[in-house]
View 1: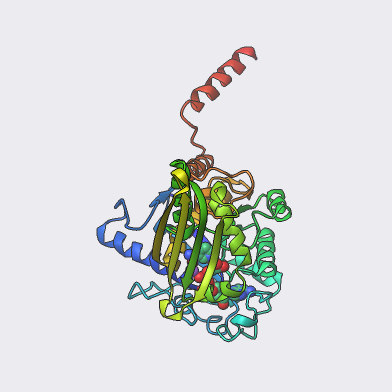
View 2: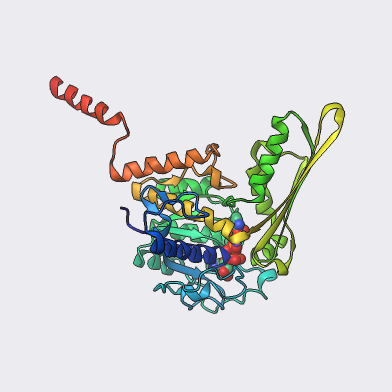
Amino acid sequence: PMEPVRIGVVGVGNNISALLQGVQVYRNLEAAHGRDAEGLPGVTRCDIGGVRVTDVRISAAFDVAAQKVGLPLTEAVFAAPNNYPRIVEVLESQPVKVSPGARFDGVPEHLAALVPVDAHADRGIEGVVEELLDTRTEVLLYSLPTGSPQAARFYAECALRAGVALVNCTPDPLATDPAIAARFTAAGVPLVGDDLASHLGSSVVHRTLLQLVADRGLDVDRSYQVNLGGNADFKNLLVRGEAKRTSKHNALGDTSSDRVCVVPSGGYVPVLGDQKVGYVFVEALGWGGMPATLEVKLTVQDSSNAAGVIIDLVRLAALARRAGVGGPVHGAASLLKSPPPGDTDRSPDAFDRAAAELARRITGTPLPGEATAVGEAAVLGGSLG
Ligand code: NAD
Ligand code: NA
């Protein structure tokens, strides 16, 4: 069995609440039904290369909000403005406190009332790097408000210097920024991103509907996707949604066009809390130019929708680091809105193949057929010598 994966989190928002609590839910299930119990509900992959969902530990946490810095992580995930619901009664105590990060553009004017900034939130790169090394963190999970490219670059620099793999949950370009990607490649540090594709989100529903219409031979005339939510992410996207809009068009791939309109946050609706409502509309023209329309309303727990994907991305990043594979990691395009250039296979199989290959490199287990090939070469070499 593999060692538990040690994750550092930057931005202790709703995504981290959903991740931490969700892992606890599955630990409780394993405690009740046995660790080898297959098929944990809501989990895509119980095991990735020998690392189970419950083998993920948070080793370090950084934030800049006065409500969160200094608190034990298990309390900070419930601090305002986080509003992901409490889904477990008891969170196993973890020895992790939220450390101050560096503010940069993470908390702009429109979030200032929601997120009062801690007085110590001006950490230099050395302090963060030292903490990542001291805590033997393997993967840094970057989960800040969207539209903070300076903060994104700062934390990417921290990961590079500490030699810690980076997972970018947000649409601020890191894996899709050629200069940054090249530096991760040169340093041999894995980079997974950009912008996670929600477990069952508007993007995959929209793409599927547009593809269906195209497959049936109709022409898309007009289509839109509008999302509503009541968490801090939606409040932020209302003002800083541009990077998200671009990323959501990337997620539609070939089905995107100038007839398709995407609205990342159509409104901040506080009564929704961390629930998200997505409306997807497609109008197509069929035989004789006659219209056909499809409308879908999707209601989801927004940050469960993130955590269900984060859990796979962080394990892939950890496997890449343990395998000594650096640069933008390929194979996770099914779980990303904006995968790195050249990583175009959006099938879940591509993920499983990439993970299996990394696991094979870690354990040194040869692929079927490879053993004989190596053996024959050795025999051949011997006879020649
Ligand atoms: P959130 O607003 O709840 O959390 C962001 C956290 O970052 C807050 O705790 C905030 O205080 C902290 N922060 C701000 N500036 C910081 C800085 N400079 N250093 C350290 N911490 C800082 O957001 P969330 O719901 O957890 O989502 C995080 C990101 O993931 C967003 O960019 C969102 O767009 C993206 N995302 C979410 C989903 C989803 O929830 N389904 C899907 C795809 C992408
Ligand atoms: Na979220």
